[in-house]
Image (cartoon, rainbow, N blue to C red; front, top):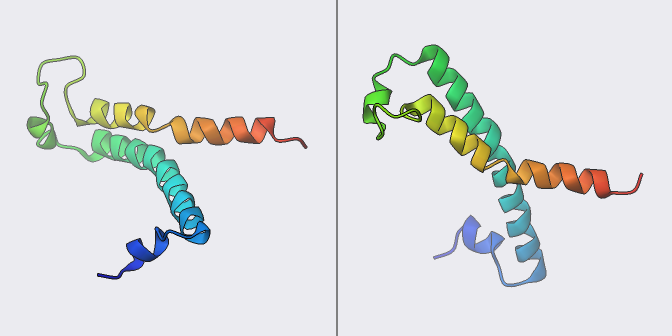
Length: 90
């Protein structure tokens, strides 16, 4: 079975470098994606999707708080990027 995943995650240094680069970009994509999902659910949501979310009646019940929490939990990649840029000499 050969495919783009097996080629990107090859055993050589180039494959490992490509896999790390891809993982970094995926990590950076998660936070804004969840933030956009939270905003669109808050604006366009009709409440039907909230019925699927566990935790009804709690403070964190509903899809919007869940997306905001997921956005916050995935913000580590952005914080790391900001820290690296500040530590880099000008």
